[in-house]
Each structure stands twice: as structure tokens, then as C-alpha cells.
Image (cartoon, rainbow, N blue to C red):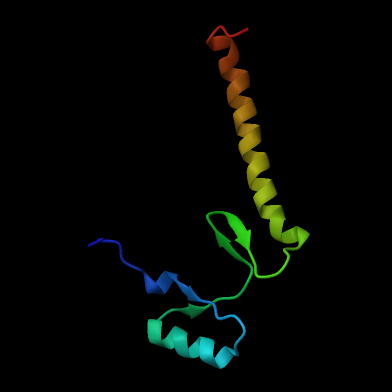
Length: 84
């Protein structure tokens, strides 16, 4: 048996192809909020339809920042380790 538990206060119910009343009913049952798309799963935007450019912009900014940090680290450590 797993000791993992769902934290319903941090969770959302998303219902596809149905009205808001049903989504609200499920949210009341599970004591959580009603969510909508696009959502982010493991840092990647997810949507039932095609994502727009601004949906991807946050992911692009995050990757650009990581690339800058990696470039800075390589620049500082390249000579320290006598790789040149």
C-alpha cells in the first residue's frame, strides 16, 4: 500500500465536454477547485486543442534561463579544470 495521498486543496477538477454545473458538483464532492485549460504538467503546457504562442513562452523563457546558467558555469569551470 502506498503512503502517497492526494492533497485536494491543491488539486483541480477539469471536465471536458460538459457544462460548468457538473464540474462544480465534482469539485464540491472532492473539496477542490474547478480548473480550465491550458494546464501545466511537469512544466509543460497541456491543452485539448492546439496551444498558442504565448502558452509556450513561459517554457521558452525557462529553458533560455537554464541555458544561460549552463553557459556561465561552463565558462567559469572550463579553465579551472584545464580542459582547454
